[in-house]
Length: 267
Image (cartoon, rainbow, N blue to C red; front, side, top):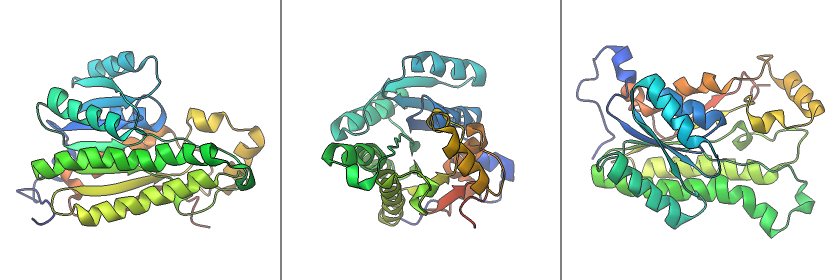
């Protein structure tokens, strides 16, 4: 089959962004970028399953977004580093929440460790890779099987500008390498799945999340001096890009990596 094309490509452009009737799932959806992605998909009309690992208030957060948007939003606890566990969760979402269907899956769960390369051991090296790379792979595998069975699906990965440059002055080679691997994984899947699913990435720059605010002030000041845009991005500014990739507004886009960084990667 060729890459999916909407029945009528001439429909009014704003209607192409609608996700009404779609079933979506977002890993790492309890906070930060993931929470705003959940909100954006719901605002666009999708029913959204929020996959979280440790958040104590995710159920309440999901209920709040559902009340605000008028769609279904439900929370599912799972571990993306476990192939069997995330597969079980994805299948449960498709069967119970989606009534046998799943249209959009966003692999957003991520973690970052600042550590000099010479100080890594097996466990600390594996930590970022298990979430940022293996977790994307296992989420993709579970979603891809459903997409192939349906004949249509949409997979989106939250990568990072760290996939295409080396952030300074912090030392985080495991994070950089795992994000670069995730972007290349997306490209491989985009080719392999072209007849039944689209696969794309979003690579944010510096986003005002808890991960960023916990850094030392001197690092924050250094980063600010390197961003041509002159400010840090609010997570809510990213949700429209995810809606775009999840919608029929970009059905010919696959294997792409959208960089959203205030110009940080340009100099």
